[in-house]
Amino acid sequence: MLTMQEIKSHYYFTDTDAKLLEELLPLAEKNCEAMVEEFYGYLLKIPETAAFLRDPGALQKLRKTHAQWFLSLFCGCYDNGYMITLQGIGQAHVRIKVSAHYVNAAMNVVRRFLIELLQANFPEIEARRKYRIAVEKILDINLDIMSTSYQEEELRKVFVSHRLESKLIHAAERFTYGLNLILVVALIVVSLSVVGLFFWDLVHVFSGSLEKGILSALGSLLILWMMIELMDNEIKTLKGGKFNILIFIGVIIVALIREILISTLRHDALETQAFLAGTLLILGIVYFLVAKSQNVNAH
Ligand code: HEM
Image 1 (cartoon, protein in one colour):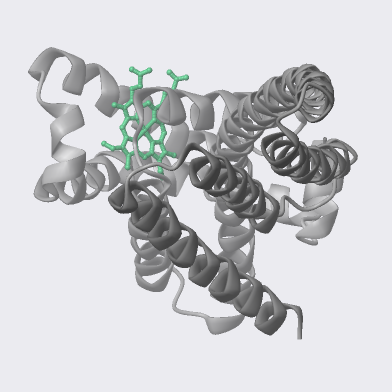
Image 2: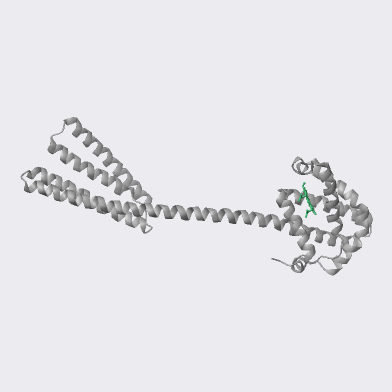
C-alpha cells in the first residue's frame, strides 16, 4: 500500500504544485456552480449514469458533494488524510456499482472544464502552463487513488472465485480418488472369485468332464489375466498415470471368448453362437481402431 508521499513523488507533485493549486481556490469557488452544471449535464445525458441520479432530493445533496470534492482539489494540503478520503470516494462508487469507465469519463469533463478556465483567466502562457501542470497532476492523482478501489474489487472477485474453484477441484479429486480405491477393492474381490472359478473348473476336469473342465479353466485363466491387467491399470491411475480404455475393451473380449467356449460345449443354438461371434468381431474391430488411434496420438 502506497503512502500519499510516495504517490505524490511518483507524479513529481511538489509543494510548489500544492501552493499553485491553493492559489487557484478563489477562481475555483467562483466557477464551482458552472462546473457542477457541466458535470451533471454530462452525467444526465448518458442513460447509464442518469439512472443513478433519478431521485431529485438525493441529486441536490449529491451536487453539493461533487462540488465539495471539486473545491478540495485546491485545498493545498494533500496528506494521507486526503488519500483516505479519495479511497472512500472510490469505494462509494464501487459499492453502488458505477462503472469505472464513467468515473474516468467524468474526470475528463472536469479536466476539460479546468483547462478552459485556465485558458480564459491566464493569457500569459508561462503562468498558465504552471497552473495547468499542477491541475493535471492532482486530477491524475485523484483518478489513480479512486480507481485503485476498482482494481481491489476486481482482485477480490478473482481471488474469491479462484479459491472456490480450487476447493471444488480438490474435493472432486479426493472423491475420484476414493472411487478408484473402491474400484481396486472390488477388483481384488472379483479376481479372488475368478481364482475360485478356476479351481471349480479344475474340479470338472477330475470329475470326468475333461473337455468342459479344460475349456472352462482356460476361459477363467484368460479372465484372471485380464483382471491382473485391469488392476495394474487401476493402480497406475491411482498413482497419477493415464487411464487406458483398451484394457476395458480387452476384458470384455476375453469374457466373450470364455462365453463362446462354454456356449460351444453347451451346444447352444447356432444363432446364439453366431451372435456371440459377431459381437466378438465388432469388439475386435473397436479394439483395433482404439489401439491404432492411441499409436497415432503417441507419435
Ligand atoms: C470525477 C469523477 C467523480 C468524482 C470525483 C466523484 C465524487 C464523489 C464523491 C466525493 C462522492 C461522495 C462519496 C462518499 O459518500 O463518501 C460521490 C458519491 C456519489 N457519486 Fe460520484 N464522483 C465521480 C463520478 C461519478 C459518476 C460518473 C457517477 C455516476 C452517476 C457518480 C455518482 C455518484 C453517486 C450516485 C454517489 C452517491 C454514492 C452513495 O450513495 O454512497 N459519481 N461521488
